Image (cartoon, rainbow, N blue to C red):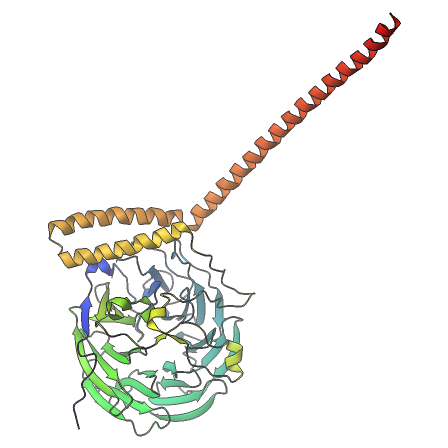
Length: 515
């Protein structure tokens, strides 16, 4: 048997400088095995510690550097935030679950938050105890799955706030869940060490098997090839991963011991390139594998090392990567020092054949009625950069329509991109060079201008500008009314004078005739 040679063996991983990362983050320390962060081409969301309840921050991707202590947060929950997930069809919509038992859906403005966000667009109240899982459907618009400590999974139509289906096939806490590629099946891992495959619209159990024999948490994802990938522990507390067929759960296609570390392994899957990343909380390394269609399906490629231990991790969609320059991925890595590092994965002359287009294929009503559809794909050259402006909710609970970007907003976006390029330029020069020092002065000046424009684009500034324009218009109308009144008065005076003159001439004419 010939040795497998991965096409990603020349993939280069480069950690950007701290000037290009996010610092001063109070990452949550709550003891729940979640990735603690989520990212899309517009924003990066991170669960943080907060006084008086749970919260998470939403940072525009272009706003790098230290985060101010008074940076606004999304703090509408009454307990610790356990899980967050961006909508795959709208970059401004994010869902969150908390220990208060409520799942909430939030709408984030294009320019980011300028004040704390406490009111959600939709509150999904059902679970008793904690709501520890939120999961979006990959191709159906507005379909969200939530899981709680009451051992139940709830499937919602976010547009109407309607509970579509209740799944009570689990006798213990559900650790994780994942849809298959077209969203027709739901795979879950549970505290009772069992792996289950469900038909989400009917609740029918299609299959079950032992996931991992260890009693610690597990994670599950479904690969595009129709394979189930899980991570967990053996009886001897060795970290493991397994690979199974979706049609036949037993026996597993692979069951591999990784190491004896404590932190749960988080699987991060990139369906566009068929790369699978493995990293655990507290680890200093990140392993990545290539997934193929032929046995043994999973092939180890390389390892990415870091100095600081990991607290959370997420992967940027391809719409947020610089594909023309060979950037195949961006990994956002939270470390133990409150820094969100960015690892850029580059490989020249290697582009995916198709990319996830972030456009819904079917509606929630169509999916619940029995229709299935794979996520829509697009060519790399037609990569839109951000998701289309999809209205996630119905007319009664709709997100305010996103207006076309104004010239001022376009200028702000351009300046933010220039700021990012300047930061990367300083990194390439070296921090101690004279040119880099001069460039950092320019960066500070540019950052001040960006902050001023952001202040002008804030809702308060827009309201004040509208009030000033309205007052100016009222003053203009008042002046026009005064000018009109003066003109009418002058016209009436001239008419009266001309009438008097005409009457005088008529009276003088008979006198001359008599003479």
